[in-house]
Length: 515
Image (cartoon, rainbow, N blue to C red; front, side, top):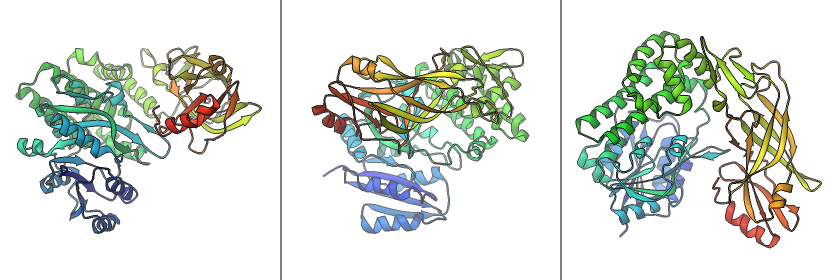
C-alpha cells in the first residue's frame, strides 16, 4: 500500500484563492493523502468551501478553531496528522499535479529525513524563481546531501516546499513559534541541522502566489512596524544561539550569519524610509547593534546593493541611508538621482554613489503585429530615475550557444514634466530586425532581452510579453519559419525552424516555459 502523506493547510480568510489551493491537492497524481484543513477563525466563506470538499472527498478533514495564528495552527496540524510524511501548504498557494508523487518517490528511494524542491512565485502575468534561490543556485540538480555538505540550503527557510518525515518533528519535538511573526525560521533551521540525509530534487513542487496587495505601501509599512522587525531579530538570534550551544560547525554558522544579514538588510534596512517617525529611534537602537555583531568577513559576501546599505548603516550615515532607501522603495518626493553620461548617481551628504547597477529596466510588450514580412512590437518600458532621453537595445539570445544578436534599437525621448524623473516611463513601437537570426540559419529558440548600452553597468533585463499580446502567426525567414510566443514565465521568446518541424517544436517548448 502507498505511503500516507498528511497535507496540513491552515486557512484564514482565503476565499479568493482557497478553491484553487484545494483543487491542486485533489488533483495530485499521488492519491494516498490525508488533508488536514484547519479553519483558523475565518470570517469569510472559507469554512463553507472546506466543508464542501470534505463532503466530496473523504481524504479531506476539516477542523475549526478561534483565530490562533499560523504557528499554533501548523502545530495542531502536526498533532492531528497520522501520515509517514507531512507537507505544509498555505491556503493561497498551489502545488503542481506531480509534486507529492515526486517528493515521495525521492524520499522513499533515498530514505531522506526530508525532500526539498523548487519554488515558483506566480501571479496572473508572470512566474519566477525566488531571487535568493537563484543567487545561491538552489535546487538546480538532484543530490542526496547534508547541511554540512550544502550549507547554502539555509538560505531557504520556508516550510512549504519540503516533504518532512513526521518522526523528524515528533522525535525532536520541533514546533513552530506561536504568537510571533516568522514562526518557521526555527523549525526549518533545526530540521535541516538535525537531518542526516537531505534529498534535493530539481522539480517545481510549490507555487507561491504573489497576492495583489503584497507590495502595496500599506502592507509594506505593516511589515516595517517595530514589532515585526523585533520578532525577526529575536528568531534569528535564537537560531544562532542554538547553533553555538549545540556545537555546530563554523561552516554552518557562517552560512546562517550570511542568511541573517541578508534577511535584515533586504527586508528591513532597505525599507528604512518606511519606518514610522515615532518608531525610528527605537528601530535604530534595535537594528544597528544587531548588525554590528556580524564579522566583517560575512559583510564582504553581500551583493553590491546590500553591502552599500550595510556600510551606510554602520557608518551612521542616516541621511544617506534615508535617501537610498527612498530611491529603492520609490518613495522620494523630489529628484535625488542625477542621470550622467553612462551612469545614474545618488548624491549623498559628503559622497556620491553610483546606483546604475540597481536601476533595472522593465520592458513589457503589449501587442505583436506582422507587418510587411516583419514583426512590429509595441509596449511600455520603465527605466528607474531616468531624467533625460536615451536609447535602448533589444537582443535575441540563442539558447544553444548563448550568443546575443541585436534586433532593435529604441529611441526613448518621451518627456513627462509631471514626473519626478521625466523620462522614467516610455512607450515604444519597434520592428524586429530578423536578418541576424536569418543569417544564423539554424533551428533554435531565442529569448529576448533589453539593455541600456549607453550605461555599461546597467543590468540586462528579460523582455516580458503581456498575456493578451500573443499571436499564433508565423513569419517566413528564408527556408525557415519564426513564431513569437509567451513562455510560462511570462517572457517573450521565439522559435525558428523549418516548416515541417515547427509544429512539433511549438508543442514541445510552449508547455515547458523554461525561461
